[in-house]
Length: 200
Image (cartoon, rainbow, N blue to C red; front, side, top):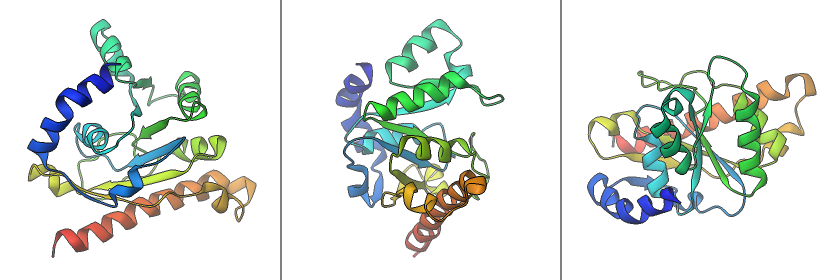
């Protein structure tokens, strides 16, 4: 697959050029299905996550980049699949669950779009749905916003979150909201921790 070919050919070069600093890198070495969630500040975010992760990460991406024939072939060959960000997209839901049911890694940016400010935007509820429905552990990731401007990514990777433990203490009517808030808090906490390290 093109993803692995590019990773083999370009991965070492990108690691040499970007020289990412990764805290908690051991948390990227997951076995079986998993969901990677990360704040989103740059078009380079999925590339940074991909080159730092031993296994292939299947990203959900905005449908607009798949609209041309070349774009559709290229991004699908990288393991990505489209999502309509404006409406409920049943096909993207099925694709995401299939990735997880096949024991693979599914990556997404819960804010739904690139956020220009340094603060986290509200998380979309789809992340909680995927985690609850699939039973996959969630790996929170935070990329420091300022690292994009300094051309050396600084990343904090948290420990896997077992959503079933959160669900056990939540009411069914508020389950999605509770899980969404917990996941957002986990990513935000990584940002706070990384800020303390990064600024000292």
